[in-house]
Structures are given as structure tokens and as C-alpha cells.
Amino acid sequence: MSYMKTTLTGYAAYRGREGHWAFLLHRITGLGVVLFLAIHIVDTSFVYFAPQLYVDVINVYRSTIFGLGEIALVFCLFFHGVNGLRIAYLDLFAPKDWTIDKTRRSMLVALGISLVLWVPSAGWMLFNLLRHNYGLFGG
Amino acid sequence: MSATTTSQPERVRVRKNFDQVAWTWMRYSAVLLIPLAWFHLVLQDVVVGVHKITTDYAIERMANMGWKIYDILLLGFAFAHGMNGVRQVFRDYIHNPKTFRAVSILLLIFWAVITAVGAVALLSINPAAQ
Image (cartoon, rainbow over the protein chains, first blue to last red):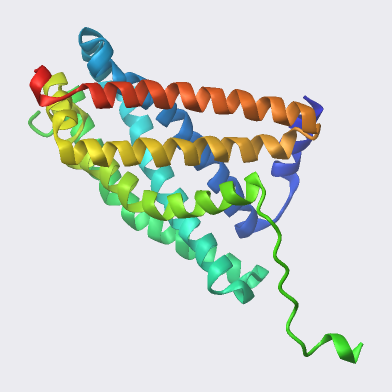
């Protein structure tokens, strides 16, 4: 437990800026995706094991709170992938660019690419959510 | 001082241990997961959307051989990548090797059970059964 406290205070107090944020975001987005994935594999298996329960699963997926989580999930997957590519690229092809200045810039590039991919997807999912759950936009 | 700077470092061959193999697979699977997982998520959550997904849609999709192979790859690579990632997170906080080994075994069991549940469901759904 003391490790956990040291870790959390360390994460908050360490002022590593972009490189530090890249590490934290990579870890948080990865954990977010794997948590969802464990649930998603089991709930999708209901299609075979308990088709009558799968209807309830779909209703949970359609709820507003889950819809917002889904929008976050899409960001997690995009960022984790883009940042993973950045790490693999630097390791394999440009190890000389593992400097504080260059990783600061490349982290912002990775974040920018993730946002470019995420914003249109998030907008469309939010539109669908508002249309189906709140009757907006002629839903 | 001067003798150390010019020559190439000597290459030493060491037998890879489990974690080196796992690390390599984390990276290979990651490259494969980018098209697999991104396309899956964009197709199901953005293009189709949860409001159009029904039990019939899921059954039809999982009965299709092409999508079945796609889903097998996704199940195999994504969850293994994720669970090994969780193990690396635990490694940062659990400093006792015995405890870490026990946690690793628990994670392995958890991974195997969840993957088996998904695989049985995925492989059992076929067009003839509908």
C-alpha cells in the first residue's frame, strides 16, 4: 500500500512535462482499454452462451454513461496506438532522438495526431448519442 | 580512454528469457493491433454505432468466416497484449519476486479463462446452427 502512495504522489509531484505526460497517458489509456476489453470479451460471448442476456448488454451499451465511456475509449485506443508507434519508431529507427527536447516535441505530435483522429469520431458518436437518447437532431 | 571510443561494441549472444520474448511479442502484436483494433472500433462504434447493433447483427457477423478470422486474431493478440501490459504495471509496484511471480500466475489464469470464454463463443457460432 505504501508503494501505491509513493507512486501516486510521485506521479503528481514529478515535473517531467511532456515525456512524463506521455508515460502517464500511455499507462492510463492502456489500462482503460484492457479493462474494457476483459468486460467486452465476456459480454460478447453472451451472444452464444445467453442470447436473451445479450439484449440487456446492448441496452447497457446504448446508455448515455456507457456512450460517454465509449467516446473516451476511442481516444484511449487512438492515443495508445499513436504513442506506441512513436515509441517503437524512436527505439528501432531513431534512438538518437530520445532526448528531452525531441521527445517533448514528438509527444505533442503524437497527441495532435490522436486528436485529429479522435475529434471527428467523437463528434459523430456524440451526435448519435444525442439523437437516439435525447431525441435531438430529428431522432 | 582513447582505446574505447572507435571500435564497434562486441555483439554477445544470450539466450532469450521469457520476458525478452514477451517484450518482442508486445511490439509485434502492437503493430498488428493498430489496423485490427482501430478498424474494429471505428466500424462498430462510429460507422455502425451501438444503436444499430442487435443480437441478430452480432450472430450474423460472428458466423461469417472472414469476420471470425478477424475476431480470432483480435481476441488472441489484443487481450494477450493487454494482460502482459498489466503485468508490467504490477512489476513497477511489486518489488518482491515471489509476490510478483504469484501475481503473474494469477494474471495468466485470468487471461486464459477470459480468452477461452471468448474463443468458445466465437468458434461455436456458425451459419449451420442458426
